[in-house]
Length: 314
Image (tube, rainbow, N blue to C red):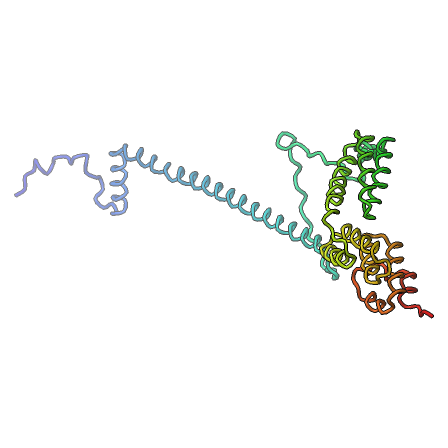
C-alpha cells in the first residue's frame, strides 16, 4: 500500500512543471543558465574580439609601408632608366655618323627645378665670342727688344786698326804686323776686346820673328818646311816660308804653286790666282794637278781659274 501523505505532498519548484518538454528547449535553457552563471567569460571574450581588430590595423600599416617602398623603388628605376637614355643620346650626338636614325628621340620628363635653398644657380662664364673686345686689349703687349748698341768712335777706330794689322799678319809681314799691333794696344787701351785679340796676334808675330834666325837659307829647304806647315794647317807659317823661298828662287814653279795653295786656304783669292797663273806659265803640266787639288777648291768656280787651267796657250 502507498502512503497517502507522501502522495499528497507538493513537488519542488526547481523541477519543471511540464514533463513533456522537448530536449532542444532543455538544452537552450541549460546554455542560458551557464552563461548567466559565468559573467567573467563575457569580458574575456570581448578582449579576445578586440585582438583581431588590432592585428588588422597593424597589417594595414605594414601593407601601406610596403606599397610606399615599392613606389620609391619604381621611381628610382625610372630615374636610372631616364639617366641611361640621356647619356646614350648624348653619346650619339657626340659621335658624328653618316646615317640618320628614323626613330624619334625618346621624350624625357622635365626635371623639377631645384629649390634655391638646396642648390644655387651656376653662373655661366661668357664664351670667347661673348667676351667684349676690351678684354683682348687688356693683355699686356710684349716689350720690343732694345736696338743694338752702336759702337763708339774709339771702338770703330780700334777695329779699323786691327783690320790693318791683321792683313799684314796674314801676308806674313810679321815685322809690320808687330808694329801695328803695338800701336793699337797703346792708342786704344780702353777697348778691352780688341786689345786682347791684338795681344794674342802680337805674341804670335814676335814668336815668328824670333824663329827667323833658325830658318834654313836654301830655297828648297824653305819649300820643304812650307809644305810641312801647309799639311799641318798652319797656313800663315807656310805662306811665310814660300815667300822666303821665292826670294831665293823666283822662277821655281812648284814654289809658286805651293804659295797659290796656301793663299787659297787663307781666303786671299786674287793673290792665289796670280801665283797659280805664274806657276802654270813656268810649268804647264801643273794644270792637271790643279784640277784635282783640294787646296784650290775655292778657286774652281771662278772664271779666272777656268781661263788659267782650261784655256789653250799659244
